[in-house]
Length: 273
Image 1 (cartoon, one colour):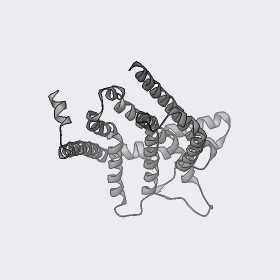
Image 2 (cartoon, helix red, strand yellow):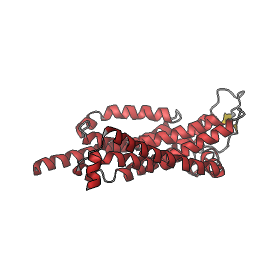
Image 3 (cartoon, helix red, strand yellow):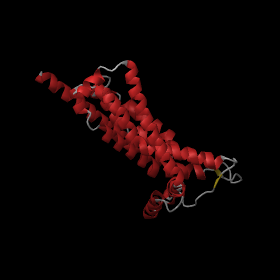
Image 4 (cartoon, one colour):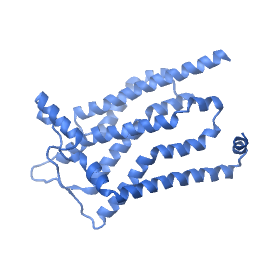
């Protein structure tokens, strides 16, 4: 109890000092994981990052099997792996460092969120804390699901389309290393962030900026936005866009249900009071 009172009576500078230590611990977690990723480069590059362009990759094998089943050869993706080249003297080294840092951020995300949540949680009321007890778990779970969806679904489709697209048979595709990795990293991180939509809806509803009526009213508008977003983060073919659009629409509907439940809980509290 004394510790809680001390936190309530902390000055602005003391709050900044506490925030600094949360940031320091988060940064150290990223650095530690980044160092491990740097050391185990064979696993990070050969088995994870470069895997989606190979025929042996899980998604590619299943797409090819499905294409044979339905007799649609176009669904067999990445059956011919393309070559990746490096054109800068320090290109592979700087890419190695960049990838290690990205891996550190992705893997350390649950701990980073936990640190920021630990800083913000004392400012909440007791009832608010009870309703946000699973914030770290659910936000981490959704982020992980988003990253996996981006890695196993969107990335192979993007790699296949962009890596095999040709304006002319006279032009040979030799993909630059940094270009390939930037595509994979941006797709997976964007998917992880997009899957945080239910958490965002939860907090915006809690502070009164969103309501289920608002989300239902602008459902048609949201579908257009989701379609546009799907077109941006996927290759420009209908199959890929529908494949990405479908889970985003599900997340939006889940957001409506979450918002509706929160409003119902708030009304029940008011009736009890």
